[in-house]
Each structure stands twice: as C-alpha cells, then as structure tokens.
Length: 249
Length: 250
Ligand SMILES: Nc1ncnc2c1ncn2[C@@H]1O[C@H](COP(=O)(O)OP(=O)(O)OP(=O)(O)O)[C@@H](O)[C@H]1O
Ligand SMILES: [Mg+2]
Image 1 (cartoon, each protein chain N blue to C red):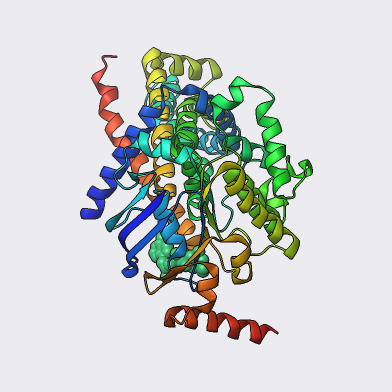
Image 2 (cartoon, each protein chain N blue to C red; image 1 turned 180 degrees about the horizontal axis):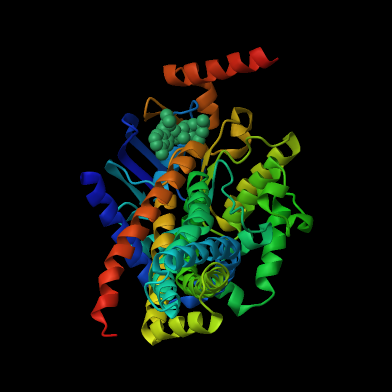
C-alpha cells in the first residue's frame, strides 16, 4: 500500500514536470516529431496485423450468430460497433505496449543505470524535457493516427470476411457500417487512442526512469512497465465504456 | 570553494559516508584517494547534487547544494563540470551532439561560429581530432569515450570541476594529456578541482593536496609530499596495499 502511494506521488511529480516543460517547445518539439514518426512506423505493421485479424474474427462470429435472424446489413453495424469502440483502439494499444512502451522503458532504464540521465542533469538539461516530454507527446500524436488506420484495416478485413463467408452483399455491409457510424463513435475511438498513447508512453517513461541496478534492473523495469501498461489499458477501456453511452445516438 | 560538512550517507542499508569533512580551496586541485568502494564517487555526487546527504551539508561557492532551489542548483551547475567515472555519454547522440548539448544555448546563439569552434578546441585539449565528431559513443574506444567525457566537462569553461577517475584506463601518453588538462584548467581558468584518482604516481605532478577517504571518513589531508611521508596508519595501509598490488603485477 505504501509502495502504491509512493508511486502515485512520484508519478504525479513527473506529470507535473512534463506539464511545466510544455512552455519551452524549442527543447522538445523536434524530438517529439521525430519520436512520433518512429512510434507510428514502428507499430504500424503489428497494428494492421492485429486489427485486421480482429476485424475478420468479429465479422465471422457475427455472421454465424445472426444468420437468418436479422437483416444481413446488421452484420455491418455490429462489426462497425465492436471494431470502432472496442477492438481497434484496444488492439492498437496492445501493439503500442509491445512495440513502443517496452522500447521506451528499456531505453530510459538503460540511460538511467548508465548515468546518462544524471549526465543530462549535470550539464543543465532537464531530463524530463529532453527524454520524457517528446516521448509522451509523440504517443499522444501517433496513437490516434494508428487507431484511424486500425479502424480502416479492421473494417476492410471485416467486410472481406463477411462477403466471403456470409450471404451479406458489399452494399448491405457498408450500409450497416454507415448506419452505425454517425460522427461520434469515430471521434470517440480517436480520443480513446490518444488516451492510450498518452498513458502507455507516460507509464513506460516513469517506470523506465525508476530502473536501478544494471542490466537486471533494466529487465525488471521493462517487465514492470509492460504489466502496468496492460493493466492501465484495460482499466481505461472500462472507464471509457460508459462515456459512449452518455451521448445520445 | 567546496565545503563538505559532516556528511552521512547510507546506501542499500550500508553506511557509506560517516561524517565526511572536507574543504577544497578556491583554485586548488585536491586529489581524493581511497580504496575501491570507499565512497569516492558517492561523495562527488553529493557535491553536484546528484545525491543528497542523509545528514550534514555540502556548500559550493557558499551555497548549500542540498537545500538549493531548482534555479539555484541550475546556476551552480552552470559553473561546474563533472567527469563521470564511466563516461556517461548519451549513446543515442553523436560526439558532436553530446558536446553541443553541454554548451549553453545562449552562447551558441550569440555567435554561430563559437560552438563548432569550441567543440573542436575542447576535443583537441584531450588529444582527439575531429574524426570522432560524427561517431556515436559506442563506435569509439573506451579511452576515447573517457576523454570525450573530460572534454564535455570543460567545454563550457566551468570554474569548479569534479573528475571521477579521469585517467583510469588511459594509455600513458593520454594520462599525461588529461593531467595537463586539469593543470591548465587551474592555470588558465583558475578552476577549483576535486579529482578522484587511483593514479598515486601522478599525485605529485597534479595535486596541490591529497585527501584519503577510508571507513566513511576523511582520514588524511595534506600535500602530496606529506601524504607519502605520513605515518598515519590509514595512509600506510592504503599505500601499502598499493605497493603490494604493484609488486604483484610486476
Ligand atoms: N546507488 C547506490 N545504491 C546502493 N549502494 C550504492 C550506490 N552507489 C554506491 N553504492 C555503494 O556505496 C559504496 C561506495 O561506492 P562508490 O562508487 O562511491 O565507491 P568508489 O570509492 O568510487 O569506488 P571505485 O574506486 O571502485 O570507483 C559501495 O559499497 C557501493 O556498493
Ligand atoms: Mg568510483
């Protein structure tokens, strides 16, 4: 319990430090864009792969369950609903944990245990401004873009599978998708993506900087970061669900 | 210039520093010696505020490092240089970028030629040429990294410089070169230096005074001459161990 409070306290301090570095974009802007590109390109293949599969599976399941019960275009709506609000953001988040979060935690952990973070501090460069801010802002930027691409990938995969294995026609499927997709769920998915990107990169940075004690310490920190990131992802996901209901459809 | 008062520090449940008192006078080179694990690096980190004492206080230029505000500490550090024992160069950056990062942005903004010139200049003082500039730290040798670390510590012309074993792992010629850097910093910049070293042979040439850290306390302070002639048991045991080790190697 004390450990948890301690982590809460320290991570709030880090969050405050991140916010207070924001007014000095000359120190982090270039780094943030570079890092955002790195995150987006790095995670893209896995994101497309996971969400494509996710869309295909959802479509198949839906198709089997609804056969002969409801009009076929409903398959499009159901696939869109599960993919947009749940599947695409969550799978994107999981891909980000593996590709980006683990990398950040290990990177910062290694810098910490080799005194590179101390060195930055000594030469008068704030480690938070130089190391954490670009990574966190990059996550905030890259994740929604990835979610958008993930949505496209999973919808197309869902469409392909639906047309192949169920009697639904393309026109019916896309009608169903459009029926479900009024502007809000898209926006919701992107916001969710941003929240995931922000929390993943923040947790990875925080836990990475806590690393102590050589390469074993870096390994421990990376494991811990992954556990914390996955847990945070699911907690956030749960918290987001009621938000969607708040909005009249 | 640097005043360490009754500093205690426990790390990992072990008391490392147990009431260290030490003063480094303005413009002198003080060599800090002691066995491996005696707490020399830990003490140095207290001087630049990377570690805070459990008890006691460190004053640099009259200001308490442990109780300094963020801005005060930043201002103090602008006047200070620190050579890390293991180099601690940023390995995602080139040598050029590493050195550039250690310079104040204002200095570089005022004069476009100042920074590149100063980078080459500071590398030259540690016997490196500009062929290393675009390499990353893992593409140069350990001794070169060490010397880049020295260059980084002096590039912004600090007047208080802390060296953690600047010559360990260097070939004899570069040991002389780095020792020269330390002496030059004193002569030309009037810098105050606190140097951790295992190079007992060079003490006479480089240090104005020597302090011995053992059992968490400063057991001896004096000139190199006094140090070698001292009958102090801690000094004898330290030097004896050295002599023994040297004999073994020979
Ligand atoms: N961050 C830390 N956490 C726990 N213990 C530490 C830490 N840093 C140093 N120590 C311990 O403090 C003691 C002194 O370490 P220090 O690095 O200051 O030794 P040193 O005198 O510099 O030795 P050397 O000459 O080998 O560099 C050692 O016993 C070390 O294990
Ligand atoms: Mg040491």
